[in-house]
Figure: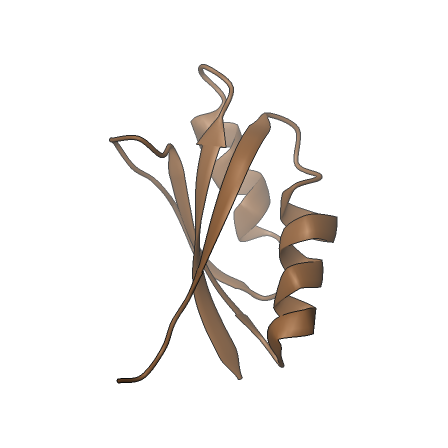
Length: 77
């Protein structure tokens, strides 16, 4: 299982709608509005890195209002 945080920038005023839509995507375990350089942070899980990539590119980036994503896979040190 691969876990990741996906940092999302949105169009002005779209953060709440983006977070709500992201929370409905299978594999997303949390989606929160935040302040700072990113507008929404999503926590997600997938079976492997390829599935995580599909989740980000095919599902999350298709949500209207998203302008940029940054995927941060979780590692165990």
